[in-house]
Image 1 (cartoon, rainbow, N blue to C red):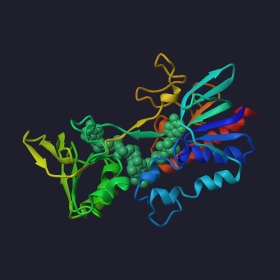
Image 2: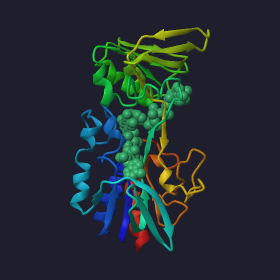
Image 3: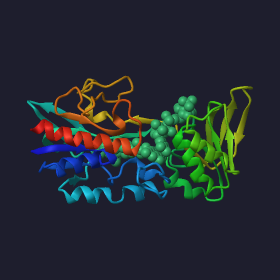
Image 4: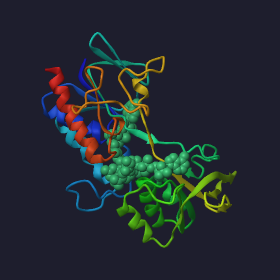
Length: 309
Ligand code: FAD
Ligand code: NAP
């Protein structure tokens, strides 16, 4: 029987583990299906984590977090969790191999994954020219032309990253103004090999047996279409929260969520189900920042201690 089970090993889960173990909980396990660190490990440049003067990669930023947590006794179980349920005040955590683990309280900190754009050709060419990770796949397009689809912080930042590797980067956004912060847009504007295709929708990603060969974009002003000859299409159109572990058989959730499936919490990261906490990108109104996810995690760790007392 665990005191506290943490599902997800990103900034939220790791910080919750640090605070819970350092605060005196003896039996705390973090379940993480991959390497700890979370989605930020896919980012090429972080410059807004407090106290971090140098611009670092996400991998560098997260490198020492697991070691610091383990120092205070956090255990890491490298398994995917498929279901969380509660019976008679005890939570049952189901692992992907069917095994179950019991815990007195639980934190869900599973974060989010890239949203699908539903653009024609996206799924056909996924992994064959279509990517959602510039840090992982950018190098394959060294000296070549690529497109980035989206207009948020991720699209703009990753376009800048790709501009340092690729010959030309087209950034295609469906509106005439980027959603990304002005500071990022200012940086984007300085890159001569980034061509901004604003107020255009992406109609189709085209290709052949070798992979992507281009994308077809359509002007919202004139309805004219044109083909951009690119070998890579990087799609950054937002993220979906990973809440499937909280779903009952009938599709309802074990705790309250909003219309986007984000978990509703109070200021102590408590959900509507007693003993279940949520932290980081999965919760309502998350600012989707590493520092905020870590802050949520700290609060959840402290709340778990209070709950068990
Ligand atoms: P995540 O980081 O998503 O971690 C969740 C973890 O849970 C993952 O490791 C996942 O493998 C694991 N998991 C999921 N489901 C299961 C399961 N069923 N069983 C077991 N494990 C599971 N923020 C900034 O502050 N500054 C930036 O510059 C910045 N740049 C970004 C650039 C990119 C490309 C991206 C994608 C994000 C960026 N962000 C940035 C946002 C930041 O990464 C997130 O806000 C933050 O990582 C959220 O942390 P989290 O712990 O809530 O979730
Ligand atoms: P986002 O902010 O939700 O932006 C998604 C972008 O994709 C928007 O510009 C949106 O267009 C566009 N879009 C959505 N669906 C589309 C579709 N089907 N086809 C084409 N375009 C589509 O997502 P994000 O950029 O991934 O960022 C997620 C969160 O993480 C944000 O809160 C962001 O601030 C944060 N983040 C922060 C940093 C940082 O701090 N440096 C870095 C990365 C991410 P519209 O604009 O028209 O809606």
